[in-house]
Amino acid sequence: EPEVTQTPSHQVTQMGQEVILRCVPISNHLYFYWYRQILGQKVEFLVSFYNNEISEKSEIFDDQFSVERPDGSNFTLKIRSTKLEDSAMYFCASSERPGGGAPLHFGNGTRLTVT
Amino acid sequence: DAKTTQPPSMDCAEGRAANLPCNHSTISGNEYVYWYRQIHSQGPQYIIHGLKNNETNEMASLIITEDRKSSTLILPHATLRDTAVYYCIVRVALSGNTPLVFGKGTRLSVIA
Image (cartoon, rainbow over the protein chains, first blue to last red):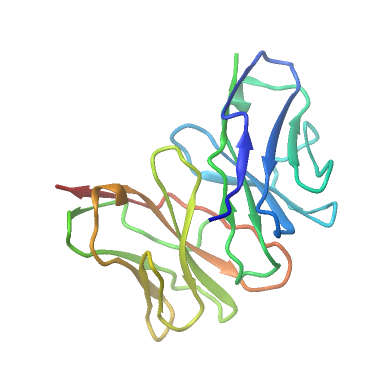
């Protein structure tokens, strides 16, 4: 069964450094999302993306964050200057078509640790 | 914020049916009911979704009340591997990539 893959599985970085988290969505999917989950807390929406544009973003997704689809297969989340509170699991998701009737399929996440 | 209410935890004996309830009394006619689960710290896993009718797939059944204000996810024969946090989510059916909004879910423990 096709799946969303994320790399790396674990990233450790120092405060103030830039990190790029990578995702390969399911191949025929066109709608992409990033979520995060701080340890012990809820899964939180960050951003949705379609046709090389951000469709919607949460208040968490501030100027320190950016997303990009650099080629036909990858979808990335960049954090420009990491803070301690950015430590979390980051999940990428994709869906085949628009609308509430198309489920999101999630990857198994990247654990980001900021020291 | 999540528009659903779920019990924080439930237990189920292995091999028995697990019935997970969800209240969504403010649901609109154009909103789907989705169920996901999260095993330990893995990514959320899609289980099933429905609009008005009951749905069944290889993983579970979804029973939606006639007034659509509540639903039940049924795992017919729970196994230890079904131990997870289960999320009931209401999602608007508009076009566009509307996000899922996760609540705290129900922590299901399947006991041998």
